[in-house]
Amino acid sequence: MSRVAMKVSLSPKQAADMIVDQLDASLVHQESHQVGDQSITTLVFEKYFMRVKNRVALIIILEDFKGETGLRVISTGSSEGMFINFDWGAANSFVGSVERILADYIREKTELADL
Image (cartoon, rainbow, N blue to C red):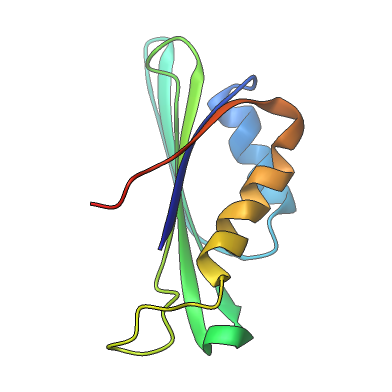
């Protein structure tokens, strides 16, 4: 599992559109909600990673509740086996692909701690 939080200089819609257009993965679900001037968008992707012989999920939550666009990017399902929690870097690679897409717009990035 890999998790990162970012703040970007784009609107949630602009960031979501860039990710959907450029991410090399299957979009499984997308939804957006607008409440006044604030919005929240959820994107769910999946991609098969040969190195872990498994489909890996990527969940992206974009919101602008605090006056700037925040993203939480979570990759899961990347472990190779039921009892082995090792993914050969697949989760970090999937999260990193979002970072590369938004690289020119990232203002701040924070690794999220394990639960």
